[in-house]
Length: 325
Image 1 (spheres, rainbow, N blue to C red):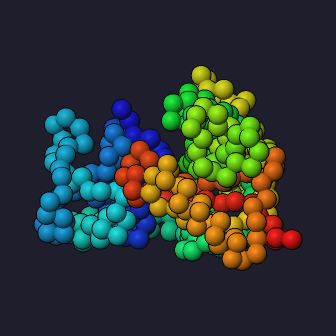
Image 2 (image 1 turned 135 degrees about the vertical axis):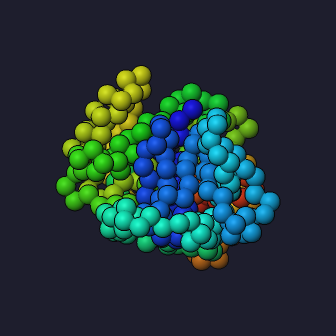
């Protein structure tokens, strides 16, 4: 199974502190370069790093694997551990021999422009260290609406494929020479979800029957994405994946307004404790929840449940609020 571009992008983000990270297609998978030096690859959604003496010293118990049948053995580090991964990339590249001429050309050609990562440039929106009141400005999103239990709903799985397919069609447009006007390098923002049920005032505490969920899944887009770019991306995705119902995805300009949020760490089913903490904060600050047909319980997913242990998942829980009368 070929690696997904979303996983390659995730790995590149994790490695960003080691230098200029670029990727190149190799035999249907992806080779990774740090400042022009090949040091790792992504195969079957696994990160494999070249074995060097400093790398082995840094991670003596690191598991090993091969990228393909007959390939040489490589390290299989934990891609979730950004700090260790960055250090591994640094010591590995320092130990690898220089390519006298080609490496210099590759480095010179590498795109050294900083990528915009909204999780870093707008930490007040994505990484609340404590419960906080926040004014959320207008943003651009791709969104898909649906209903049902997200753990088992084919509707929800299809929504994920649509949102990531659309988002990466726009992000990778530069590689095909079709970048929209105003394009800049950026990290695809995290998945978000608005959740409610037919009962008014849903605050995020999961109902006993999760099939009662109604939801809007969404991914933020850079400001250069407008309705024309949306239409182009939807047409491109329909060409690449004709079995997808691209009519489900919509373009949405949304200003969320006055909200309160808190960072929840742990499984999704334990969010009630963090919601209690958020409510206690609101009481102390003179605010109250302001749920309505337009203002919903909102979650921002900073971890991938397929690759992150449940106890390490990070989710921003955001509620619409108003000043208490």
